[in-house]
Amino acid sequence: MPSDNVRWGVTVPFTGVTLPDHRAWFDEIADLGFQEIWTAEADGTDGFVPLALAASWVPAMHLGVAIIPAYTRGPALLAQSAATIAEMAPGRFTLGLGSSSDVIVERWNGISFDKPYARVRDTLRFLRQALAGEKVTEAYESFTIKGFRLGRPPEVPPPIFVAALRPGMLRLAGREADGVVLNWLSAEDVATALSVAGPGTPAVTRIFVIPEPDPEMARAAGRRMITAYLNVPAYADYHRWLGRTEVLQPMWDAWAAGDRKGALAAIPDEVVDDLIVHGSPEACRAHIRRYVDNGTTTPVLLVVSPQERLAEALRGLAPGA
Figure 1 (cartoon, helix red, strand yellow):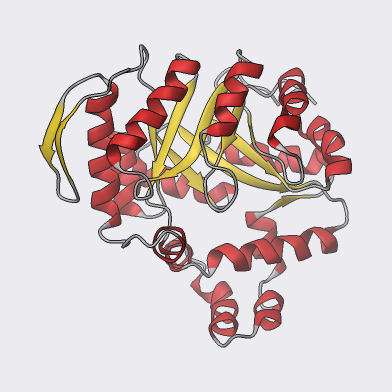
Figure 2 (spheres, rainbow, N blue to C red; figure 1 turned 60 degrees about the vertical axis):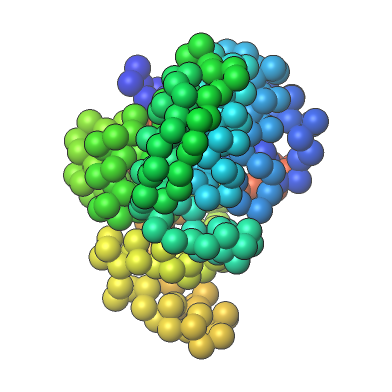
């Protein structure tokens, strides 16, 4: 399963495990042959603090965040946060940047979700300058910066990957970023996305993994995850673009009508099986390999498992298993 051109990552923090207790888990991840530790930022921990801990506890690991929203920190503060992790892990940190969604930005943070493409593009361009230690005075389309310079620019500026769902952002990722972050798509959808971003674009793909041999139990959990995400307008539009309008419309209709049970029941098994990796460790590893075969260069596993079975799950999913 390992490849010289592919680096395997795990999403942290783990559900039910406190941050101080992650030190042993970080050691376990490294011992199992995973090379990267990645975070996210939605409604749990922030994206940077777990990486600061990992930088101190497992100094050989590469670190990444997929993603930090372009709206929820001001540009200068975002540059400072990224520079801090880059200083702690020189040459071993990747910053994932994206628009996030109207739910996180507008409903939860009270920030207007205007012009997401422009905001991500402008933040990317600003960070390029700021993390290089330049003084920035610039009127971008979505914000203006007057005379900002990082007091501690990192010795090694981190690569910046752009999270992309549809063609505009995919093209931005391929044209101006160092790579693309993909999320909530099938293995075959990776090839579709990269055909727009550009063949050869480095791709970090978050892959949802339920290492549960009982398919009905795994699909039940997968359906709950799918309804939570794919009813967000940005993700619904994404899957319409990917060609799932016909199979997902009954779920969207039931959800819009307030019928949560009906929405769950309306998701076909084939959609769950495409979007959620599940089954035995061998079946999961084979499914993850399909993501790699379609262009993923960094598969980042988000493992859904009870805490008491987490170590077993990670061992079964490890690159060298």
